[in-house]
Length: 309
Image (cartoon, rainbow, N blue to C red; front, side, top):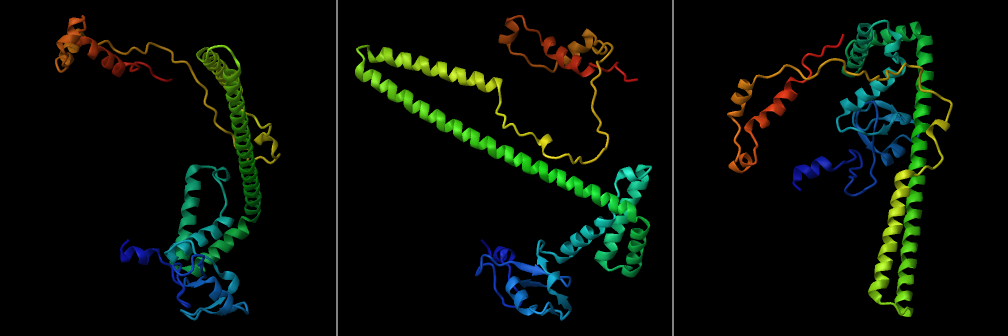
């Protein structure tokens, strides 16, 4: 690893100079000014709740620190601004009469986020956001409730799927253990038969092999007919529904009409076949070069005369 790679991977607290090389559990926190501090320095400097930043002297609050997620603070800041703005600008496409209005609304959101992230017309943008919140109070609250229900539904569904997967794994492990015990029992039975029976060992081994094949065939048949079912259905988890949005369901329609396409003249077929090279061995069996051309040409022309009303 080069020195530049080490520099990129290493994280260092600017105050105490502790690095993640020295302390594997080092966690850097960041506040609104964008300067990093480790957890211990935050606890020590902000014991009274607020204090100036050691780097820029901006007065910060302790509860404003959060875990650093991105190397570039501008990205970190934009993500936080976007998250805050989208709590209020939470309309969906169903709230608009046309797609154009919805796209204009999304463009307005991006403009607001850009202004806050770039410190452009901040006061005017704040006034615009406050006016929007006041004019759309009921819609904002309604969409927040719908979003909360959606999140609750997805969370419960995820937990249900995780529980079902865990039960399936436990069931498979139990089946594997039982199968191992059965194999050991059959092997012990085979050894006892060989030791105590007067029949030839080859005959006993043949009967054992036939019995193993019969057992395996039965297991494969049962496995193909019925998959494991834990008895737990995701539909049972909650009465909460994500939304009443109408879902498009595809309906198959039979193709009506001749789909063979236009016929190709034999003259064109022979002209196409001139570029095909066939060995003498293939031609000896009655195979013609035209056969190689007919299939791809028919496929290419197929369906050309079918038009949907």
